[in-house]
Image (cartoon, rainbow, N blue to C red; front, side):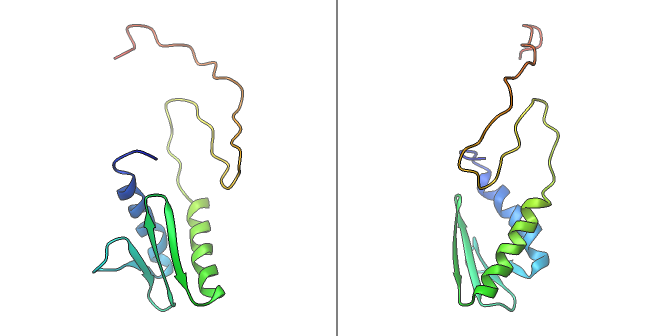
Length: 110
């Protein structure tokens, strides 16, 4: 999603969908700033970086657990072309063998 103008909106929609059930809400006054209803934690998503402010390790672990659950339950969409599923937190992304999909004919190109 990097470079996509809608990436921020898409990321924020994902946060709403996956973190609201865990008690996290976006602040009404400051868009992009999130807090928990009962725990002492706030965070914000800026482009592709998180800034997290917390006072207790258990509170941080609650947020991280919610985010891990969100990333493992994410629905995948069917893609018309082959792609490699990213290996999250891996420093190097390996791909499978070269794509053997035949090239498009002139009539199939737009």
